[in-house]
Amino acid sequence: MVRRLLQFAVVASLVFVVGVHWILLQSVAWTGMIIVYSQTASLREAIIKTFDGQHPCQLCKAVQEGRAAEQKQRPQRKLSAKVDFFCNHDPVVIETPPPFQQPISQSVHFPTRTEAPLGPPPRLA
Image (cartoon, rainbow, N blue to C red; front, side, top):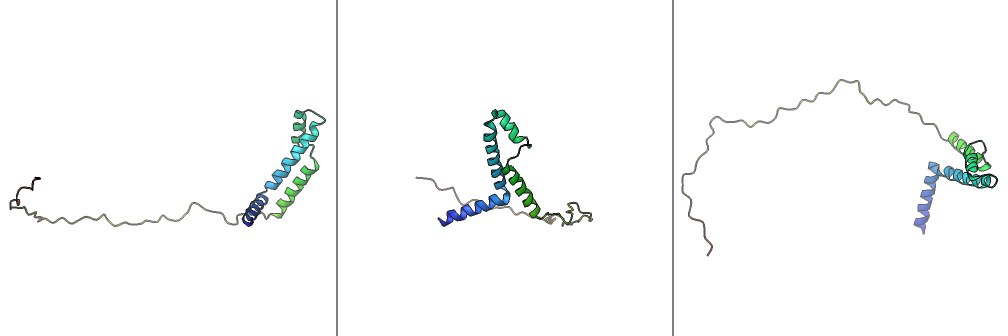
């Protein structure tokens, strides 16, 4: 029970931080406007009248004022320093050692075997 309540609180706070509540309120306002306008005109005319921006309802005005007040309260973030992705410095040269080479001796001697093998291999009975 407590876990569900905490999950709901987290989701609700994220909704308010992102501003989804204004979208939900605006959607409710548009739905109500379409219903009201369609009672006196056709559905097509009601939709046009709803979204033309010239006939806002009280809820639409409240949403606009709320969004404007919220924008004024948010601090405007400006980058104080310009990020320079291209450096004007001299390139760094890293010298790597030469590849390893085994010294080859001039007097390499590989001995050969002169003794005979011990005997035939064992056979299966």
